Length: 112
Picture 1 (tube, rainbow, N blue to C red):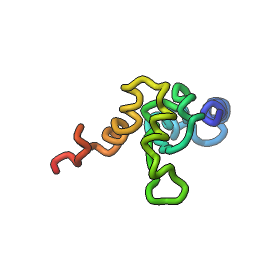
Picture 2 (cartoon, one colour; picture 1 turned 30 degrees about the vertical axis):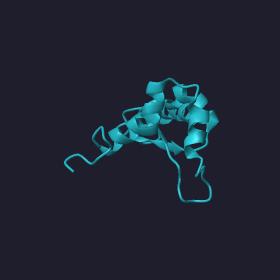
Picture 3 (cartoon, rainbow, N blue to C red; picture 1 turned 60 degrees about the horizontal axis):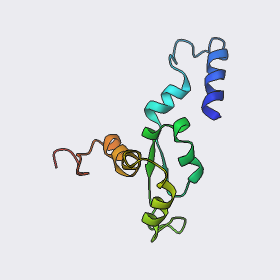
């Protein structure tokens, strides 16, 4: 909802809002290219990956905080992502972080 609304406001009001010559792309495109979200317990978000964008989602454990799924993070993740294709799960649990941080496929810093 927020991205849809932001796009409408941008489209309808950017001329008088003083951003027409500064913001050339709708907020939803900027979000897709620059915003990432982490989760450790979000079944709703996982059911709505098509709207969020699978490339913008990363799995976290939030260890050692009390608001986390640890020590059952793996079990919780498997239960919540069980309906997803294996390649989507791989992107969420490691691939997106590797791309975002510029790591090697082994999860190491490039050049390390």
